Length: 325
Figure 1 (tube, rainbow, N blue to C red):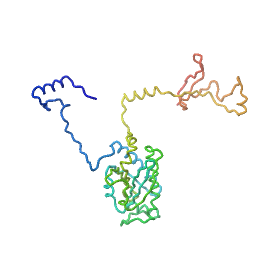
Figure 2: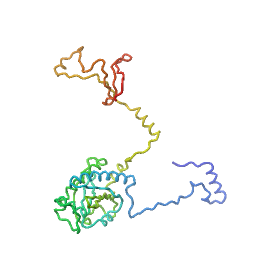
Figure 3: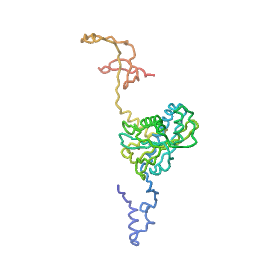
Figure 4: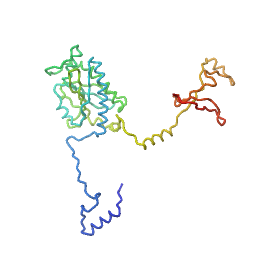
């Protein structure tokens, strides 16, 4: 909307024009002064994901880390701690250059998003995990070597459990989401899920299994998040905040205008189908309550009050006698 000038501002502009024909910016009000603030921007690595969306992704995968800790502890029969350590935006080539070679690299198909994510587990974790699965103590190895096909297959149990937990945290964003392990490779540079200069969201976890410690990375291409970007900006509160009196009043007004169903239950009885078919006008059905009994009054199928049946202004009514404790 265009801003309307005040009379003082109009006079200042006219006076400046009359004095010399050129405007002296230093004598004008602040709103006419040029703004010289600059924001640094890296064109080689632009931020494709907003800060709110990054916070949302962090919240999601922090929950994944806690759930995966419990699941992996049961699977490996050892105390496992998984902690989200960082989340950042980098290019895919920078992600690959930071990885060890060899490492356990798995391409994940995400459906119905039709996107590719990458899950990488450092060999400092993979070898102890395989050792535990084969009945060993799960001690760290001194020398890192390429994985055999059998060792790669033994990691399927860990990957499948990780995908199950990822589906649980992503189902709030993508309906009927499914994660599928499509490709497993020990050399990450052989696989390109996006172009090298594409921006990705790198989520890093620290995994501790007994005395063993290593890194697990989840790589999410920013381009894959574009179709669901509107669902990643939902503000979520993990703590408490102060509620203003105005907010309280607005909530109260909304609640007061809400329509609810209220029922008074006179009683219950049991009849056979034959008895029901034999019922005629004027027949009396004996209930399991007495005349002096207090009857339950339900609000949206939940007992909230107790009352008595009566008549008010010619209509059947229930008089509230007491609140449910």
